[in-house]
Image 1: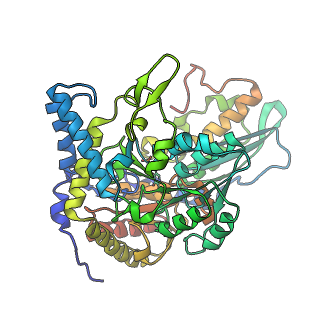
Image 2: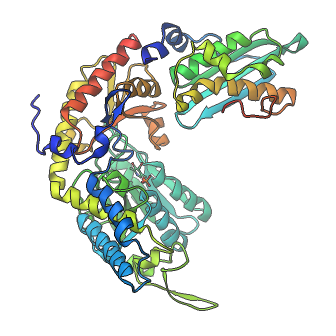
Image 3: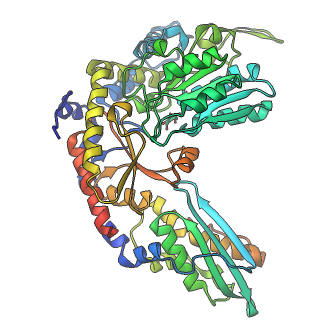
Length: 412
Length: 140
Ligand SMILES: Cc1ncc(COP(=O)(O)O)c(C=O)c1O
């Protein structure tokens, strides 16, 4: 197979200080990007720059530092919004995808979900797109139902359509599965859900970091993503919402910054999106996320995607040559995000991860916060290799060599 | 120590052919626990005989080679011993059974899951608290 490159990986690798690190005396081969990505120097510098030059609270102080911090924070909002085809005023900064989902649960769900209602999610979701809806359903006396999967790891649209006939209040679906890599046709799903009268929530945790995303084209009501999975800092992410919904929604947390006026018996809310950003916000990490967006934009998300498609194609072909290797999810790299979940004969993923770690290779092993999906796959856990811009064909070769070694140790 | 040493022949043998694997028809102690990090799962059943001895012991479980092999080895060691003996079992004993592999902190939990299940079950039966004599948590 041809090892052609659409981006200059060697040059990109120089931007990531951590990649110079050795693990157990070996070159670090970091293949746990679906859990969290490494950070380029530009992002680290943005954090250091903020704390060393203009650290200050935002939207409060009129001194120079305060003005600079506010401008940088709001500029980051603009960058993040533009990156996903949204307007800055429809984007609230949150801690990450999990908080985005929980914000919808409380600020929209508490008011709109009633006893007897149906909520719909799918069997391939991360726990963060299941548990909040379970809690909401339980509190309201509503029922949470799950769209099934087809044997190839794609959504069973027949099962989806039949659930829509129950007129659900909400449909929550992931854009890209963190286990199977399945890329869902969220535009079609949202259009159908909306026609059936449902509000749609799309989990973008694994799509935004890896492919061009246009929320306007998807046509969803809510969309969440996490900064730390897209080369940005931890502790920052975003919820993008349809503006009329954001306007009529209740606040999430109460406190400073989210109010307009406070009286003893009531308060009025600040304008969207500040209504959802109570207290001192995560200024530094928002600015860091802005730097990550700049970095990815300079590479080009279409190139990031093409790079990962080629790596996945190469990896699937090459790893299948390892005896006992079995991958889960769609086989066509074009239909898959930069994730390969697999098992190696009867080697438990944790044993495999230990053996690979000794070779400097970091993969994820376990249930990937998707236990209902594990049950559907009829496995306890899987191993997962996931890619980003700094991963190379060499990394795939290293993984293959590691799997061969594990196979030899376990006498497969 | 390399992973080739951790996953010695012996551990792989216990992983693939666990001794004392299964359930008892009649038992006095039934104890189960999981390791949320990896989903390792161990359940042990014990029939207590004369003189408060471990007359029969079996386990079932799912998980990595280290957790399953160490649980199986522990049941072999425990069989025939007085219940009080369980209080003296230490993590060092378990490591010794496994051949003293060099495990990182998260894998140590895999290795000790069987011991935790054994101790929780037996301490419960004896009415004692799941703590070592000095009051410390034996898992740490
Ligand atoms: C598909 C998916 N959704 C949601 C999340 C949760 O993201 P976070 O932990 O950043 O809130 C993850 C991350 O593990 C994920 O992969």
